[in-house]
Image (cartoon, rainbow, N blue to C red; front, side):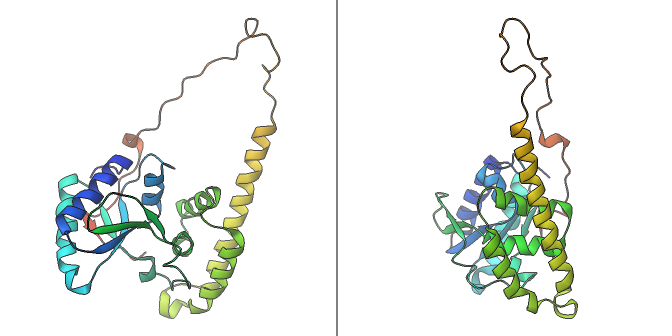
Length: 231
């Protein structure tokens, strides 16, 4: 399987739009949104939810499978609503994308719903995903608190395989990580360089070449071209 860059993501969306050729909405989710926006260089799978008429679902799945195989991509077509109860107003909080498609409208899924969905899973990359939304102003603390309070009563291990108390603990951990990230940025910006104020020709800082991040060093997961996950 190939890694997903901004270029391959755009190619995937346009080829899917052409292969499917029917109305619908494609929502980008999580790291896929971040790649589109340029916040990260690549991810290992296309994570989306495509909302189409039930009668068109079979045609969509055929198109997804064909395009994913042609481009060598792992594709996960899953709504956050398959995993968590979606908070009120999630549809209007989606963020439209001018993708130049013909049949499929393209949006980022509501970042609040996405953040709650990934906190419910609780892996370390899931926290970083939510912190990235905070850093870019896609979610705000007051709104997140209100929406979490709204959906938590719907969580139970029996009905959703989720523990509301555990999700609340993860939520508190998110804010601790966010506050630590802000403090770290403040500390770095306040450090005075040992070379500041010196004449350029007298003393020069040592130069260190760092390797450029490359997808070849990343991890690749996914069972095949098209998959559905519920974890």
